[in-house]
Image (cartoon, rainbow, N blue to C red; front, side, top):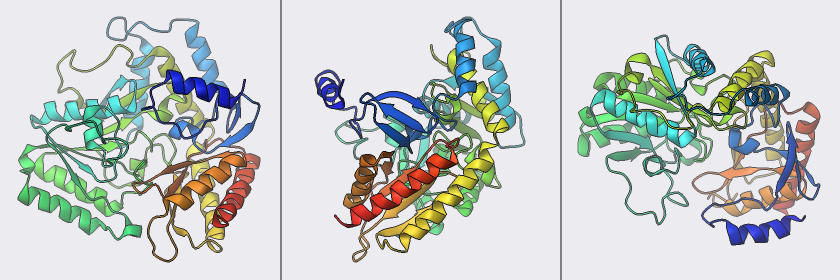
Length: 425
């Protein structure tokens, strides 16, 4: 079986709306390595978009899921509940930032977790307006697509967005957008267009994911907290991509001196199985009436079992410290590459959530073409990279945090060779 043959079948069978970055069809994977159906081996610096932080097929995760499969795979927690769901909620309530009582709910996807956080904020406050940031990515459902701050490919052609959602600028130092600009955007919004007394929630990513891996400055996060406290607004941290050791702490918000009211999470929680959650202040989480939250597959027992194992692995293997170590080594190597690569305009990100941004050395304009050449050159050499950013000029590095040192070193050599090849055209 060849990748090209399967690709032709894919074109006939799958909607073209499901975009694909590669035509590499996976056959098996282990930790940071993937082999395709032709037997080609790749080092995975995508991790399913920050899903397998604990690596592909971690033995502890696989064992937990296998054991649960022998008991039951589904009952629907709202019909026949199970203790493991409650125990996972207890663990997240204890682990999430904030010195206050918390409760959790489980759903299936990151977009669902964000949708439910907005529902909770609205029913708690009795208000409807939501503020998000330019460049944000929150999902592809209508509400989360509306909050996403990037038109193409997420909003283009899908008609009118949901009402009562507003965007303000997000700080991007490399592009001259400061925290002061973001806060001024909020002030202007409140003065010109929106009564803050109508705002249910302000939602932000501690590190913008699809938007370009721009970390939220500490003074921005403190400013959001202050506004929320002044006006009775719910502060939501979207940690779908930043959660579970990726940024060097269990949650990215552990790196700030304030806590959000609600946290959304998914991706890394399940180690490859679909599970998502909202954790937050108990009084807010209890605002909804019974039956107002939930879903048939929410907190599926296989996903719950995987999540318990993921939390164990993060603690037992000290993956937060490992993320900081790997991120530091990656940044050092990128700085070495920058010394001979004027196209590199920025290197950034906490922990092992690192990005490199490329721009034309002369005009300083974002260079998506060069960025894509780097990605394709790396792919030819056996390294899977992801691009992101509103201008498509950012490479984001999301390898499993469990990647062995030898594979990491091999990937760094491939990366350096790929950048050099991209410069040659």
